[in-house]
Length: 362
Image (tube, rainbow, N blue to C red):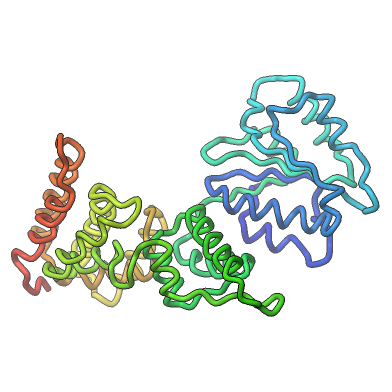
Protein backbone atom coordinates (compact mmCIF):
# COMPACT_ATOMS: atom_id res chain seq x y z
CA UNK A 1 0.00 0.00 0.00
CA UNK A 2 1.28 3.48 -0.84
CA UNK A 3 2.39 5.64 2.07
CA UNK A 4 -0.22 7.99 3.49
CA UNK A 5 0.15 11.72 2.98
CA UNK A 6 -0.32 14.17 5.84
CA UNK A 7 -3.87 14.91 4.67
CA UNK A 8 -4.77 11.23 4.42
CA UNK A 9 -3.41 10.59 7.91
CA UNK A 10 -5.43 13.49 9.34
CA UNK A 11 -8.60 12.30 7.61
CA UNK A 12 -8.18 8.81 9.05
CA UNK A 13 -8.29 10.08 12.64
CA UNK A 14 -11.88 10.44 13.80
CA UNK A 15 -12.62 12.73 16.73
CA UNK A 16 -13.16 10.78 19.92
CA UNK A 17 -12.07 7.47 18.38
CA UNK A 18 -8.75 5.61 18.65
CA UNK A 19 -6.50 5.43 15.56
CA UNK A 20 -7.84 2.91 13.03
CA UNK A 21 -4.52 1.03 12.87
CA UNK A 22 -2.27 -0.34 15.59
CA UNK A 23 1.14 0.30 13.99
CA UNK A 24 2.28 3.47 12.21
CA UNK A 25 5.63 4.24 10.58
CA UNK A 26 6.38 7.95 10.16
CA UNK A 27 9.19 9.01 7.83
CA UNK A 28 10.12 11.86 5.49
CA UNK A 29 12.05 15.11 5.62
CA UNK A 30 9.80 17.19 7.90
CA UNK A 31 10.47 16.28 11.53
CA UNK A 32 8.06 18.93 12.83
CA UNK A 33 5.14 17.29 11.03
CA UNK A 34 6.23 13.89 12.33
CA UNK A 35 6.20 15.25 15.87
CA UNK A 36 2.70 16.66 15.31
CA UNK A 37 1.53 13.34 13.88
CA UNK A 38 2.91 11.53 16.94
CA UNK A 39 0.98 13.89 19.24
CA UNK A 40 -2.26 13.41 17.31
CA UNK A 41 -1.94 9.62 17.24
CA UNK A 42 -1.06 9.41 20.93
CA UNK A 43 -3.88 11.79 21.89
CA UNK A 44 -6.35 9.71 19.89
CA UNK A 45 -5.15 6.47 21.49
CA UNK A 46 -4.66 7.35 25.16
CA UNK A 47 -5.96 10.90 25.66
CA UNK A 48 -5.77 12.03 29.27
CA UNK A 49 -4.26 8.72 30.43
CA UNK A 50 -0.93 9.39 28.69
CA UNK A 51 0.89 9.77 32.03
CA UNK A 52 0.24 6.08 32.70
CA UNK A 53 -0.05 4.67 29.18
CA UNK A 54 2.66 6.29 27.06
CA UNK A 55 6.25 5.11 26.65
CA UNK A 56 8.79 6.85 24.38
CA UNK A 57 12.03 5.03 23.57
CA UNK A 58 14.89 5.10 21.08
CA UNK A 59 15.56 2.00 19.00
CA UNK A 60 19.23 2.00 19.99
CA UNK A 61 18.24 1.58 23.66
CA UNK A 62 16.06 -1.48 23.12
CA UNK A 63 16.79 -5.19 23.26
CA UNK A 64 14.43 -7.82 21.82
CA UNK A 65 13.27 -8.61 25.36
CA UNK A 66 12.63 -5.00 26.38
CA UNK A 67 10.77 -4.33 23.12
CA UNK A 68 8.58 -7.40 23.64
CA UNK A 69 7.73 -6.28 27.16
CA UNK A 70 7.08 -2.72 26.04
CA UNK A 71 4.51 -3.52 23.35
CA UNK A 72 2.79 -6.28 25.31
CA UNK A 73 2.30 -4.44 28.59
CA UNK A 74 -1.46 -4.07 29.21
CA UNK A 75 -2.92 -0.55 29.49
CA UNK A 76 -3.52 0.89 32.96
CA UNK A 77 -7.12 1.90 33.68
CA UNK A 78 -7.74 2.50 29.97
CA UNK A 79 -8.52 0.62 26.78
CA UNK A 80 -5.26 1.40 25.00
CA UNK A 81 -1.65 2.35 25.59
CA UNK A 82 0.87 3.93 23.21
CA UNK A 83 4.51 3.20 22.49
CA UNK A 84 6.63 5.61 20.42
CA UNK A 85 10.01 4.40 19.16
CA UNK A 86 12.25 7.04 17.61
CA UNK A 87 15.51 6.57 15.72
CA UNK A 88 14.23 3.63 13.69
CA UNK A 89 16.98 4.29 11.14
CA UNK A 90 19.43 3.05 13.79
CA UNK A 91 17.88 -0.39 13.55
CA UNK A 92 19.45 -0.92 10.14
CA UNK A 93 18.26 -3.22 7.38
CA UNK A 94 20.57 -6.09 8.30
CA UNK A 95 19.21 -9.00 10.26
CA UNK A 96 19.41 -8.32 13.97
CA UNK A 97 17.58 -9.93 16.84
CA UNK A 98 15.68 -6.70 17.58
CA UNK A 99 14.63 -6.28 13.96
CA UNK A 100 13.52 -9.92 13.83
CA UNK A 101 11.49 -9.44 17.01
CA UNK A 102 9.90 -6.28 15.60
CA UNK A 103 8.91 -8.00 12.35
CA UNK A 104 7.43 -10.92 14.30
CA UNK A 105 5.40 -8.47 16.34
CA UNK A 106 4.20 -6.58 13.24
CA UNK A 107 2.76 -9.82 11.86
CA UNK A 108 0.36 -10.03 14.85
CA UNK A 109 0.42 -6.73 16.77
CA UNK A 110 -1.18 -6.30 20.18
CA UNK A 111 -4.64 -4.75 19.59
CA UNK A 112 -4.47 -2.70 22.80
CA UNK A 113 -1.12 -1.06 21.96
CA UNK A 114 -0.61 1.78 19.50
CA UNK A 115 2.96 1.48 18.19
CA UNK A 116 4.40 4.54 16.41
CA UNK A 117 7.78 4.08 14.71
CA UNK A 118 9.64 7.27 13.72
CA UNK A 119 12.47 7.56 11.17
CA UNK A 120 14.66 10.68 11.26
CA UNK A 121 14.72 13.15 8.36
CA UNK A 122 17.07 12.24 5.54
CA UNK A 123 16.94 8.52 6.34
CA UNK A 124 15.27 5.78 4.30
CA UNK A 125 12.82 3.49 6.10
CA UNK A 126 13.15 -0.27 6.09
CA UNK A 127 11.01 -1.65 3.20
CA UNK A 128 9.96 -4.68 5.25
CA UNK A 129 8.69 -2.44 8.05
CA UNK A 130 6.85 -0.22 5.54
CA UNK A 131 5.01 -3.25 4.18
CA UNK A 132 4.09 -4.50 7.65
CA UNK A 133 2.78 -1.18 9.01
CA UNK A 134 0.68 1.84 8.08
CA UNK A 135 3.33 4.17 6.70
CA UNK A 136 2.99 7.94 6.40
CA UNK A 137 5.50 10.03 4.48
CA UNK A 138 5.71 13.56 5.89
CA UNK A 139 7.78 15.88 3.71
CA UNK A 140 8.07 19.66 3.66
CA UNK A 141 4.77 21.51 3.29
CA UNK A 142 4.06 23.31 0.05
CA UNK A 143 4.72 27.02 0.49
CA UNK A 144 1.00 27.80 0.11
CA UNK A 145 0.19 25.71 3.17
CA UNK A 146 2.76 27.16 5.55
CA UNK A 147 0.73 30.30 6.52
CA UNK A 148 -2.23 28.15 7.55
CA UNK A 149 0.06 25.77 9.45
CA UNK A 150 1.64 28.79 11.17
CA UNK A 151 -1.73 30.04 12.40
CA UNK A 152 -2.73 26.57 13.59
CA UNK A 153 0.55 26.06 15.42
CA UNK A 154 0.26 29.51 17.02
CA UNK A 155 -3.22 28.69 18.31
CA UNK A 156 -2.03 25.43 19.89
CA UNK A 157 0.62 27.47 21.74
CA UNK A 158 -1.94 29.99 23.00
CA UNK A 159 -1.25 32.93 20.68
CA UNK A 160 -2.82 34.38 17.55
CA UNK A 161 -1.09 36.22 14.72
CA UNK A 162 -2.59 39.02 12.67
CA UNK A 163 -2.08 38.69 8.92
CA UNK A 164 0.61 41.39 9.05
CA UNK A 165 2.39 39.71 11.97
CA UNK A 166 2.30 36.31 10.26
CA UNK A 167 3.54 37.83 7.00
CA UNK A 168 6.49 39.50 8.75
CA UNK A 169 7.43 36.30 10.59
CA UNK A 170 7.32 34.27 7.38
CA UNK A 171 9.37 36.84 5.48
CA UNK A 172 11.92 37.06 8.29
CA UNK A 173 12.25 33.34 9.02
CA UNK A 174 11.13 31.62 5.83
CA UNK A 175 9.18 28.38 5.52
CA UNK A 176 11.33 26.22 7.79
CA UNK A 177 8.83 24.73 10.23
CA UNK A 178 11.44 24.01 12.89
CA UNK A 179 12.54 27.64 13.01
CA UNK A 180 8.96 28.91 12.89
CA UNK A 181 8.00 26.62 15.78
CA UNK A 182 10.93 27.87 17.82
CA UNK A 183 9.99 31.52 17.25
CA UNK A 184 6.34 30.83 18.11
CA UNK A 185 7.38 29.13 21.33
CA UNK A 186 9.40 32.22 22.24
CA UNK A 187 6.36 34.43 21.56
CA UNK A 188 4.16 32.19 23.68
CA UNK A 189 6.64 32.28 26.56
CA UNK A 190 6.75 36.09 26.42
CA UNK A 191 3.04 36.17 27.12
CA UNK A 192 3.38 33.73 30.01
CA UNK A 193 5.93 35.96 31.65
CA UNK A 194 4.01 39.20 31.24
CA UNK A 195 2.02 38.75 34.46
CA UNK A 196 -1.14 40.02 32.80
CA UNK A 197 -4.23 37.97 33.70
CA UNK A 198 -5.92 36.28 30.75
CA UNK A 199 -9.24 34.55 30.37
CA UNK A 200 -8.79 30.76 30.10
CA UNK A 201 -8.51 29.33 26.57
CA UNK A 202 -8.33 32.81 25.01
CA UNK A 203 -5.23 33.03 22.77
CA UNK A 204 -3.03 36.09 23.25
CA UNK A 205 -2.80 38.36 20.17
CA UNK A 206 0.76 38.91 18.92
CA UNK A 207 1.57 42.27 17.32
CA UNK A 208 3.85 43.15 14.43
CA UNK A 209 6.00 45.06 16.91
CA UNK A 210 6.53 41.91 19.00
CA UNK A 211 7.54 39.95 15.91
CA UNK A 212 9.94 42.71 14.87
CA UNK A 213 11.50 42.85 18.33
CA UNK A 214 11.81 39.07 18.58
CA UNK A 215 13.38 38.30 15.21
CA UNK A 216 15.20 41.60 14.78
CA UNK A 217 13.54 42.41 11.46
CA UNK A 218 11.43 45.48 10.73
CA UNK A 219 8.53 45.54 8.30
CA UNK A 220 9.56 46.27 4.71
CA UNK A 221 13.20 45.40 5.54
CA UNK A 222 13.16 41.64 5.00
CA UNK A 223 15.23 39.65 2.56
CA UNK A 224 12.14 39.34 0.35
CA UNK A 225 11.76 43.12 0.24
CA UNK A 226 15.37 43.26 -0.98
CA UNK A 227 14.70 40.59 -3.62
CA UNK A 228 11.56 42.40 -4.81
CA UNK A 229 13.37 45.72 -5.14
CA UNK A 230 16.28 44.13 -7.01
CA UNK A 231 14.12 42.24 -9.52
CA UNK A 232 11.84 45.25 -9.99
CA UNK A 233 15.06 47.14 -10.82
CA UNK A 234 14.52 49.69 -8.06
CA UNK A 235 18.24 49.80 -7.42
CA UNK A 236 18.23 52.69 -4.95
CA UNK A 237 15.76 50.91 -2.66
CA UNK A 238 17.62 47.61 -3.04
CA UNK A 239 20.88 49.28 -2.01
CA UNK A 240 19.17 50.83 1.03
CA UNK A 241 18.04 47.37 2.14
CA UNK A 242 21.38 45.59 1.84
CA UNK A 243 22.77 46.74 5.19
CA UNK A 244 19.65 46.20 7.38
CA UNK A 245 19.09 42.77 5.83
CA UNK A 246 22.71 41.72 6.38
CA UNK A 247 22.45 42.82 10.03
CA UNK A 248 19.70 40.28 10.69
CA UNK A 249 20.51 37.15 12.68
CA UNK A 250 21.71 34.26 10.53
CA UNK A 251 21.89 36.39 7.38
CA UNK A 252 24.85 36.48 4.99
CA UNK A 253 25.71 37.61 1.51
CA UNK A 254 25.72 33.99 0.34
CA UNK A 255 22.16 33.47 1.65
CA UNK A 256 20.97 36.63 -0.13
CA UNK A 257 22.61 35.56 -3.39
CA UNK A 258 21.18 32.05 -3.15
CA UNK A 259 17.61 33.38 -2.95
CA UNK A 260 18.30 36.12 -5.47
CA UNK A 261 19.70 33.55 -7.90
CA UNK A 262 16.57 31.42 -7.61
CA UNK A 263 14.38 34.41 -8.45
CA UNK A 264 16.62 35.39 -11.36
CA UNK A 265 16.30 31.89 -12.78
CA UNK A 266 12.52 32.01 -12.36
CA UNK A 267 12.32 35.42 -14.03
CA UNK A 268 14.54 34.18 -16.87
CA UNK A 269 12.20 31.21 -17.31
CA UNK A 270 9.25 33.60 -17.52
CA UNK A 271 11.15 35.75 -20.03
CA UNK A 272 11.84 32.73 -22.23
CA UNK A 273 8.12 31.88 -22.22
CA UNK A 274 7.33 35.47 -23.24
CA UNK A 275 9.84 35.27 -26.05
CA UNK A 276 8.20 32.06 -27.27
CA UNK A 277 4.98 34.01 -27.67
CA UNK A 278 3.16 32.92 -24.51
CA UNK A 279 0.62 35.55 -23.48
CA UNK A 280 1.36 37.27 -20.18
CA UNK A 281 -1.97 36.12 -18.73
CA UNK A 282 -0.87 32.49 -19.07
CA UNK A 283 2.55 32.94 -17.49
CA UNK A 284 1.56 32.54 -13.82
CA UNK A 285 -0.11 29.18 -14.41
CA UNK A 286 2.78 27.83 -16.51
CA UNK A 287 5.35 28.98 -13.98
CA UNK A 288 3.33 27.65 -11.06
CA UNK A 289 3.15 24.17 -12.59
CA UNK A 290 6.90 24.17 -13.18
CA UNK A 291 7.51 25.24 -9.58
CA UNK A 292 5.26 22.43 -8.37
CA UNK A 293 7.41 19.97 -10.30
CA UNK A 294 10.75 21.33 -9.04
CA UNK A 295 9.60 22.53 -5.57
CA UNK A 296 12.31 25.17 -5.00
CA UNK A 297 13.11 25.71 -1.32
CA UNK A 298 12.68 28.95 0.60
CA UNK A 299 9.97 30.47 -1.55
CA UNK A 300 6.84 32.30 -0.52
CA UNK A 301 3.54 31.06 -1.96
CA UNK A 302 4.33 29.41 -5.30
CA UNK A 303 1.32 31.06 -6.91
CA UNK A 304 2.42 34.48 -5.70
CA UNK A 305 6.03 33.90 -6.76
CA UNK A 306 4.88 32.75 -10.20
CA UNK A 307 2.90 35.98 -10.59
CA UNK A 308 5.94 38.01 -9.56
CA UNK A 309 8.24 36.24 -11.99
CA UNK A 310 5.78 36.84 -14.78
CA UNK A 311 5.54 40.56 -13.95
CA UNK A 312 9.30 40.97 -13.48
CA UNK A 313 10.03 39.30 -16.81
CA UNK A 314 8.46 42.31 -18.55
CA UNK A 315 11.20 44.51 -17.06
CA UNK A 316 14.14 42.52 -18.43
CA UNK A 317 15.41 41.21 -21.74
CA UNK A 318 16.73 37.67 -21.97
CA UNK A 319 20.23 39.05 -22.49
CA UNK A 320 20.00 41.26 -19.40
CA UNK A 321 18.86 38.32 -17.31
CA UNK A 322 21.75 36.23 -18.60
CA UNK A 323 24.16 39.01 -17.65
CA UNK A 324 22.52 39.32 -14.22
CA UNK A 325 22.85 35.58 -13.58
CA UNK A 326 26.52 35.63 -14.55
CA UNK A 327 27.09 38.63 -12.28
CA UNK A 328 25.32 36.84 -9.43
CA UNK A 329 27.50 33.76 -9.94
CA UNK A 330 30.64 35.90 -9.90
CA UNK A 331 29.46 37.63 -6.73
CA UNK A 332 28.73 34.29 -5.10
CA UNK A 333 32.21 33.03 -5.97
CA UNK A 334 33.74 36.23 -4.60
CA UNK A 335 31.88 35.81 -1.31
CA UNK A 336 32.98 32.19 -0.96
CA UNK A 337 36.62 32.58 -1.98
CA UNK A 338 37.70 36.00 -0.73
CA UNK A 339 40.09 35.99 2.24
CA UNK A 340 38.27 38.97 3.73
CA UNK A 341 34.70 38.95 2.45
CA UNK A 342 32.89 42.27 2.02
CA UNK A 343 29.31 41.03 1.91
CA UNK A 344 27.83 44.51 1.90
CA UNK A 345 30.04 45.81 -0.90
CA UNK A 346 29.62 42.74 -3.12
CA UNK A 347 25.82 42.55 -2.78
CA UNK A 348 25.48 46.33 -3.21
CA UNK A 349 27.56 46.29 -6.38
CA UNK A 350 25.48 43.45 -7.77
CA UNK A 351 22.06 45.06 -7.23
CA UNK A 352 23.36 48.39 -8.53
CA UNK A 353 24.19 46.61 -11.77
CA UNK A 354 20.58 45.53 -12.16
CA UNK A 355 19.57 49.16 -12.85
CA UNK A 356 22.15 49.64 -15.60
CA UNK A 357 19.67 49.35 -18.45
CA UNK A 358 16.41 50.00 -16.63
CA UNK A 359 13.97 49.96 -19.51
CA UNK A 360 10.76 48.34 -20.66
CA UNK A 361 11.67 44.94 -22.08
CA UNK A 362 8.32 43.85 -23.42
